[in-house]
Length: 77
Image (cartoon, rainbow, N blue to C red; front, top):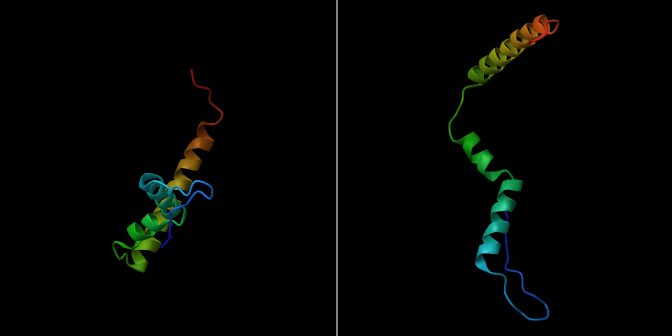
């Protein structure tokens, strides 16, 4: 978990406002991909389901590539 400490201006000794600190914390969390990791771990997916999903994606991608390559010679009007 990223830690964010309030920045203090060296000359005037003003402390950074809370909203800026919160914004920096959100950016640090986003950069560390914490939210994505939590969403990924929210539900357990069986290894077989992952394998099946990958195979389906590969099949779909190949089908689309084949379709695009067949239509490549034609011009649209």
